[in-house]
Length: 312
Image 1 (cartoon, rainbow, N blue to C red):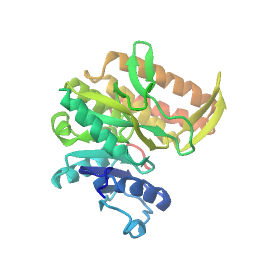
Image 2: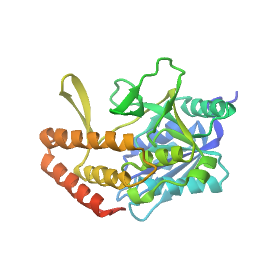
Image 3: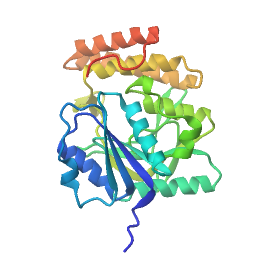
Image 4: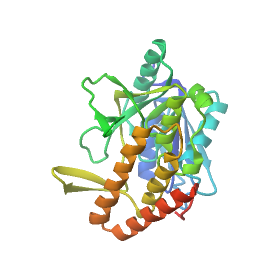
């Protein structure tokens, strides 16, 4: 019987940095029956779990490719390396993934089908993306548009709805290589944060649209750890290591200078950064280190510094 979940023209690109064997195998196994090839691009891990391919032997329909790098080049460069390999091997689409992202059964086929329906209607599609659920369970994420007063979260009123959105997480996004040829690759100078945001708005500036597919779902972790707190209501908040706040703030300032980034996004992002600084400056366990990284990011953002700055 044919595997209706299998998409022969899709390759997955999974970027890793010091992953655990269990998490890596779970991520690869989840997608390996749905795509033709899986490219694991490792960003210079100091302790990469060598037996991962042996552990998955005989369980995968797709071909597994390991592309180790000598140092941490960042998420943008990692995705670009995998994208170029997929292009050379004749894939039509790439599915971008993080090392802790696990697509649910049928997700790739749903994304591929939604793309086909949209293009049949004459829409120029840059990417279609998944919703995600945290590994600890909980509610599904919502897609985002940028409003005058900030970011607007969109509800999936129907399980099979496809929503016009302003940007998508890179992880769980299906991108046609023909769109990348027109829009360009990921911006490696940003290193980690806002790489997906920048590419999505660059795509929109080229006349493309982005869509969230409500019945395409994956599990995904935002932040190195999560904590439940009370702030007007019970919330689960992702916490990052301090160095991440450097890139968040620096890259925001770098993007404010770019003309294709919409003014309403810049205003919404400034408000978001203020909230992050106040919130994590007050309650984070390592708040002084986090505030220091935010300040360094602001200084370097003003100076126009890009690329990898910190050792990690």
